Structures are given as structure tokens and as C-alpha cells.
Length: 192
Image 1 (tube, helix red, strand yellow):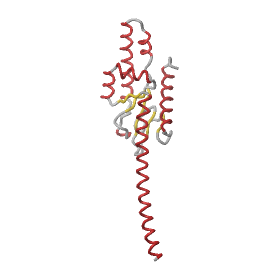
Image 2: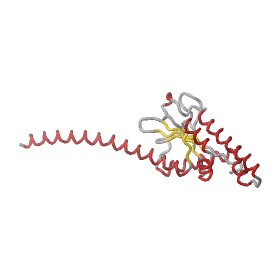
Image 3: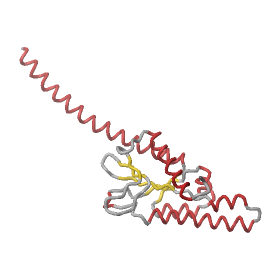
Image 4: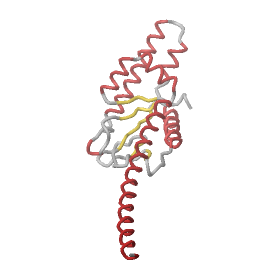
């Protein structure tokens, strides 16, 4: 699976979807997978739909080949060459995410996109060793997330979603209490 770029992509999507489901998101209700946007033909791997219909787009990317070559290389020159290649690959993935209209006011998206890297080791390597890439991603409003940080982001979004629903329900409950209070007042008058 890891030797084939397309299979790695599918694997990354599967990991992301499993994390979405494990947090409590429901497909078709809280998120959709691989659906075209309304105003453009691009299709993010996942679109999380917030209660007010705002969208958070997620694209899974799995840069790997050059990193493996970097890890396995014996000579310092080869290590440096493969590190440059890996850096270029990650920058290319960021560019792909930013050129697909995943941040789009017409689509009612948030002003960032999540680039999910489904392997914690690769994510940590980027975070620890590629500071300039990390800075470039942040400037372009791309939030890179490995499995742990993606889960934390999802939990935060899901909790916000639930709080919004509770608040909505609270208003309905208060309305019902007011109606009950009025009806109870009418009952007391009728009873007297």
C-alpha cells in the first residue's frame, strides 16, 4: 500500500474517516466525503459541516517516498538530497491544497483548510525538521495535522457542534417553560 501513491492516498482518506467516526461525526449529517463543491468542480476528501452550514475542508496527503530514501541513505549528500526532495514534495502538497478553492467565501468555508497527514512519524518529522515549510503552510492558511492533532481538532469541532445544539435546544426549552407557565396560570385561575 505504502509503495503506491494512489493507494497511500486512499489509506490516508480511510484513516481520516475512521477518526471522524470515532469522534462521533456521522457521514451525510456532520460531514461528506469526496463531494464536489457547489461553485467549483474541486472535491475535498472531506467537508465537515458546522451547524450554521459553514464548511471545514480536509484533504489527506501522504508524502513518503523521499522521506524513506532520506532515512535509509548512508551518505550525508544523499540524505541532504532526499531531504530537499521531501521538503519539495511537502511544499507541493501544500500548493495543491491551496490552489483548489478549499478556502472559498462563496462556498461558505472557514478561512483555513486542514491538510491531514495520516502518519504521526511523517507529521512529527515535518514539524520538527521543516520549520520553513510549517511557516509557509500557516501563511497560506493550511493547518497540517497528524492523527493525534487531527483528533484533537475534530473533538474541539464536535464539542462546539454539540454546544451549539444544546444552546439551540435550551432556547426551545425556555420557550416551552414560558408556555407552561402561562397555561399553569390559566389553570390556577380556572381552579379558583
